[in-house]
Image (cartoon, rainbow, N blue to C red; front, side, top):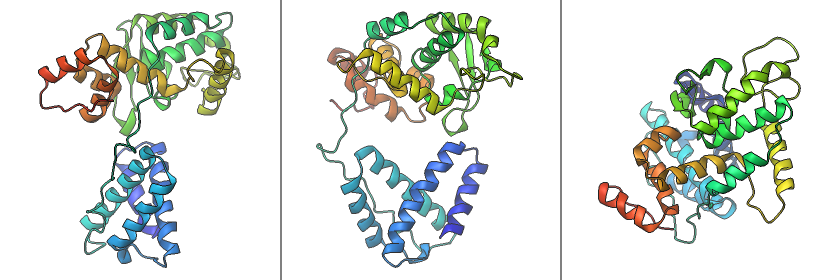
Length: 302
């Protein structure tokens, strides 16, 4: 099982999938293999539909809806790959569906309001180069609509101040996209880049966002910064995390009348279905306007 799993992951890596995505797929398939091993199954060829039904029942009791969705997707894509290559006679996963009930359907997290974001950025200190870097990072997540992993991968050479564009060369699925700089992001990057070199402690390897030791900012260091920021805001304020800023800008753009297909491209969503979920968080009159303009796109209400 492990040999075929690694062969599958190797092919997906050769197609350009990011290392983090490959790591996630490996983890999900290990969970499946461990479950099947406990049932006495040691070859993918011996897996039957009833085994996968039992697996789905097990994860339904243990994991939240979004995690179950990802685990199911990993199973279906992998078995489809095995079937296409003749490794199995038939695909035992083709009948699987995520049984979403109204109770299971996740409620979307409310976005930050525009004033909340403005107040947060205005309240952040600006006395050190590290402070300016953190402000620029928040702007990348909010005004740039970036995923945390995308912001951490940026190099100085990706920032085109003259054209007011950020070249995101390795987005989700290794798909590049250009991100226009809104005024807040442009101002934050301009201020930070003037003092960025003061953070360097050795050779400049080109990373855009630097920590106090002069190295590229990592997810753990960003999470530590978020923890401090949330402690300062107090328990009564909405909990901040990287995706909340991206989530919020999507809603703010919709409220402002931006075309949903522009927002899809801006966020780097492969499917319009992903972007349309944000319509659940905008006023009813805006939803109605989008429905009239795009009647083929159904919208789930909150």
